[in-house]
Length: 178
Image: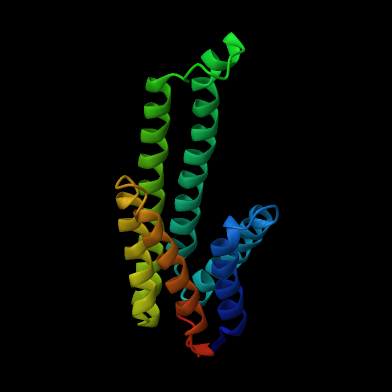
């Protein structure tokens, strides 16, 4: 029998900290702490179920999403160069640059959420807790729906809440699979 008490707490709190990432000043710290806690929880679940795909899919989703954020910042800054070059804050940034930036961030966010969804589906297959699968579905379709006036962000937000509830719903012990 393998104890999941730590996984419940780490995964649940990690998900909640990611949700609180919007709080001014300390939100980014909470998000980083949340991601670290989720990585630890995913690693422990990978060990409990002897399936490295749980951790690998989560890591892949994170790295793709992080790449989207970094590329978005870089391309977003480059699209502002005409405005900075002229020294006028009344001129508009490059429209093409902003559209290109949005499309890159959008595509990479969808890809990242796809891998998160795969990770949560694997966990669902081992635990039988439907909320893991539902959380992944909300996050993935929310990422796709962001293009509709940002409404998909609500789906992503709900997905993180469902993930926290799913972690807290894990039983105390599982048979370790070999």
